[in-house]
Length: 493
Image (cartoon, rainbow, N blue to C red):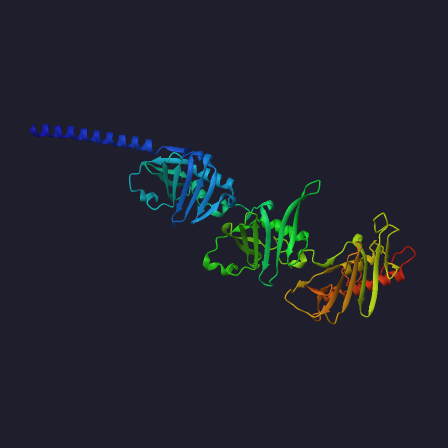
């Protein structure tokens, strides 16, 4: 009997223990279900953008990016790898959109970890986000491992024991390259802020300076005005103006982080091209560009601490000499201001004269245009005037280069031009050989510092009615005068 009672007691105890064990498991299962609910699609808002004052993101290698915000969530600056990028260097819309995407996390599930969080990569964060809010609070988010099926990423928030799973897209947002936040423009400077733009090219020593003048109101719109002050005082050509406009609003094709040890590989240790923009405040902005490498120029800018590259050919006139970019004539005369030019060369002297009638038009019958008193208003079938080819060759002599330091003698003069203007002013230009292909240019018997090419005196451009040297334009005009038909037309055979 005693044995039976003992067995009965043991059975009761076992049954009680079994009920207790099953109850505990049911309780644990209920608790786990409450914490491991599928909450896919729900959004966890860390804070509103207007509350945010800073967001610091540190990746697994320790690279830190900090976003600083002012009132109402307006981006002020971004610091990346200890380099500060101010608002003018940033694409503020992209920055705000990016930060906004990190403040709202699309959560798939949450659970209470039953083992070490190292299982989820939360002991060695891939990314750590630290949010500082306007009310002084701070939040820290730890980003762990990506799920094996790449459907999500684990994360945890300081002060919350749960582990969460965010959509994989959240992790992809964190991997966005920093250069995506930078403005497309290396510089964005309004010309009204600029006093001067300077340029130099290392390979040939060419350089120029351009003064930015007040806009001119032409009655329809404000026209930008510039004046070249070096190497000579002249007006710029359109291509130089386009170059300056490009430099003031300089777009990059791509930002490239170039380390100090790799600068030489990208030509930045000895830049080929240098621009300096002097602002009216006295501040300067400097842009350095490499020589062309693989179809690109690599560069850096003093106001933008990120290195970049731009396509070769994207900057108008970059490889042209300064004398191709400015109105670089020895002297430039306009037809309505020109009276006569007396030219002596090759033991020959000839005179080109112009007298406008009251209409003030070259085409008028009352306007005379003569070569040695012979009518030089001979045209070809296209309406181009031979006499004007000669006028251009005399009154638009291009400067090849400058050599201010030279001190040539006024001797062995090969050609002389004496010009008289309508306002009775006059000047003399003389050409002294420097070598077989170049001449020193004297104005009123003083060396001007200008060097011109032989072609300004001797160049036959064939049937094309442009680009003749003075001697060949003289012979061409004589040929047209001698062979014109009754209508005053001559076409070269």
